[in-house]
Amino acid sequence: MRRLFLTHRSPYARKVWLVLLRKSLPVDLVVVDLANRSPEFVAISPIGKVPVLVDDDGTVVCDSTVICEYLEDRYTHVPTRPEGWEGRLAVRELEELGDSLADQAIAIFFGGQNGQPTEKARGVAQRILASLETAAPGDGGPFCGAWSYADAAVLSALGYWTFRLGDDWRATFPNLAAWNDVQDAHPDAVATRPRV
Figure (cartoon, rainbow, N blue to C red):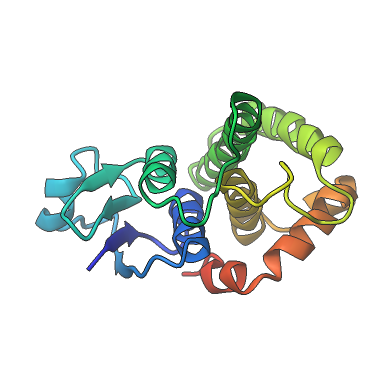
């Protein structure tokens, strides 16, 4: 059986989980205690990060972006990226914005916990949020015309931000907030929301 090693707080793991659900690929979730990584987990993830996918045939794939590309290449029945270089470029750029927003939210949260300055991360996050605000479809639909793993990345980053840092970003970025409300109401999104 396919397994996804994750924590329920990781925006990167949520991105992969959303893609698996959209593709209707059954998966067993293996929750990892990152403070006490098991020997099994360290054996398949030498850098000790989630997510890690172990496919039905034993193929091991690490890193959320690599996993999403792998799933798209191997399981083509439900596309999560468009055909053609222009569409693929748009998805890759948007996914990078989503992942980078998640990076900044993590830096702000843990920096605040450890008493470290967070101004730089907040500045980068504000620029990313402003870019997403401009690009978000007004009807709440997918960013690139059809749902892609880039939508999963942005939704996961916003979900993590709200979970860890609150939702005051919504007042400054109302178009993005409206997009988030539509996307976050999907049953797959509800099932994968971050939690302790």
